[in-house]
Image 1 (cartoon, rainbow over the protein chains, first blue to last red):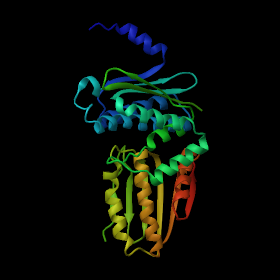
Image 2 (cartoon, each protein chain N blue to C red):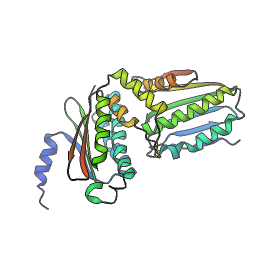
Image 3 (cartoon, rainbow over the protein chains, first blue to last red):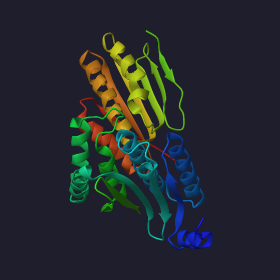
Image 4 (tube, each protein chain N blue to C red):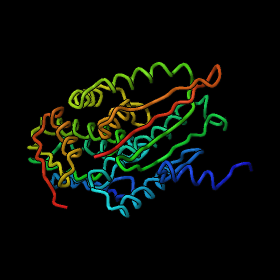
Length: 182
Length: 126
């Protein structure tokens, strides 16, 4: 093991990371992370408005990761691309939820387009877009339907920050950062 | 027709559907990974109720959280209720939200804009 734990500790401390995880995402993991963050926010006596927003965004981002792997057979089972990473942090001004996962290069443009579209909408336009997709969108087998990202943007109130990095001919690494503040 | 009762869990709400009284309650958290599977018994029961509903139907939605996967299923439930209403049952949806929870109030208003059933927004004190 080459990792320097003290360095890692200081890195997490410096960036106000409450929780970090790398690995597979199961339904049980989602439940546990929600529980940990909920009790952390309880301890910090966060106002219920913030608590609810963080909880909601966390549910959507973690379940996006959960479904993403299940719905992409080319990723599942291959450990080098099926693992995800996420960090949950709290700075003075905002809660930060960051997720990262591998995806197929072929799907990058569509996702980039979707996030850009959401980022270009104002709050009331986002509300209309949400209703439109809710009412007309096609549901996937698991019940998703493109609503997740819109909901994340609505609850966050900030623009979504993202990055795609092509790692080889087939895969890119996708990172998403969501900020939640008063 | 038998009533439907599903106990709540940390990820799924309590559901009580009393068909003789025409009363449906959904309360708690609705954040399952697979919402379609969870809501199927309720959607089936509503289908059964559609053919011979009570003269009035009262629906109470008292959710603390719901994920977007549940939001589609909740819409399906409301669409079934529209059918029940057009079959002659005087139907009302009471949408509960905690004081200060603007997001939950807005979520109720989103449904209100889509669904052709009277909504009553009920604020609960914390």
